[in-house]
Length: 428
Image (tube, rainbow, N blue to C red; front, side, top):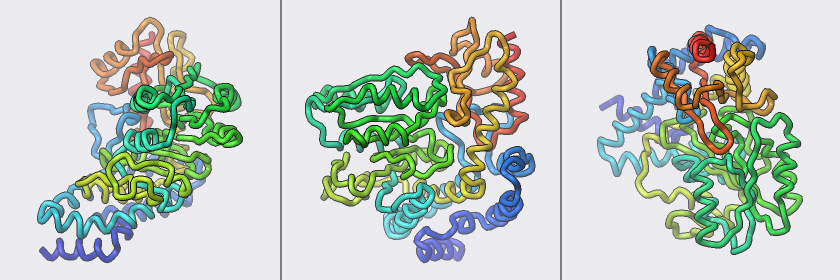
């Protein structure tokens, strides 16, 4: 009882804004501080390959020791400190749900919003906390004031939930969808930008850009596309499901008007956690997707009218932010790109092997998509799993056919040696 009272007193006093790691796991926080002090003094080149630090990161997760998970692009596991926080918050909620959820944990939402805004580099009043990219992007897609004949530029490589949302607006409201079919991999940013610009007309109102294409890891130059769009009075929606906490950037740098991401991917937050960003002056132009007393108001919180939600899951996002900050956004990006290059470079010259992600390091990071001549993607993924216990996902979407391989910060080079051995057997 004393432990519970102290926990709640500390949480209420801090409003959820104190270090989540220290609040929920003092022992882990102490070790994390020790690792951070040593790690932060290393040169970036040393940090990228520092086996001691990345070994500690791996030990912070509870991933299977036998099944090698290389589908982190779908959803990532959480470090144990995030899992523990989630469970602990959940247990407190169950002691007296309506009291602890709405009078205690709910008080942590504003400090958490500020914490996410700090990571994202924007104002807290531009951030809504929700459940995933689909929810955030659908809020924008269905909330924008568009009329029949207004044009929306998007690509056939976008995520299906977003494609279907736009098709629904096309069917319901008569907007015109203008499709690009990107021939990935594309090695030059200007080539990508020119394809988007060629689709713009005086009737274009929106351009929908996927920052990192989930099928293959192709990174699109959102900032350059946004600059060209804004010259023509076109608004920009960015699907950042796979880029936030994966590559190092702040949201305002992209110059997009609307942005959404899933925090359960690269941030390693609890499953079903996400974030929506809208430029402050644009909030009033987007109707709330769910009921709200001011659906056309200027408060970003109108997008959080979800009814009863998982307060425990939401509060544990703070632990994920802290864990991410121990590593650092830039170092994380460098490590993830290093891991991708580590295994790709060992098999890229095999006669039967080809790839669907760019070679240009500025246009891809952790995600790779491999094809083996003479084998269907489903056959490759099945062989990897059945013979080598490697979980990767087969991709058959539009013009992208291969197996997506996605390591994360807990993936070791020894894990990837196992993948390389399996690919050499398959492509021999």
